[in-house]
Length: 74
Length: 189
Image (cartoon, rainbow over all chains, first blue to last red; front, side, top):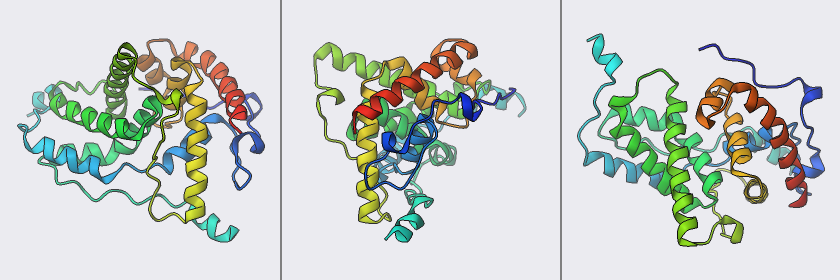
């Protein structure tokens, strides 16, 4: 799949000022809403208990079938 | 103090220890994509407990349907599809039952990384609250578009497929979504 560049040139982007996006204690500037969301996502960890729950759930299931396109080449 | 804060800015939060999954494939799937799926569900549902449940359910569904994955889209896009449908069903169900939503003031716990300094955590928590309030004020379409575009692994084509529209339509709506986000974010200050 050809990936297309998704980001507009800087002058076409909707600028978001520091005062708009940051609290008074903040030291960061974000150029776009996506940057804000990326920052937030990077600092949002998945709680460990999700993996633990999933581990328990998966143990009660049969193993996953291999995708059809993988089975073709076996 | 600023230098201490600066040091934490680019530090990735510690990741969860490897889960004891029965299948290594599932473990790999989880390790590679769980952060993005959890974040999407957190911001779509507006509640950390529901996001935990949804992330668990999404990966369990993915594991069960792994044999159906045709490989004609990226694994990330496939998981997003499952997550979007799951969250959509949950939100619809809540609306039908008139159960409170994030707009009504649910207290969140975004599970900030333990390694962060208290100040850093406070800042990130505050920012997370403002982001959630902002997203809650946007239309579902704008909210989803912004969250998907924020993932650099997704192309416009994949976002178009996930949201049922052309890449050109995604571009056009994204411009308006950015504007709407900026305006609403300003109001949360």
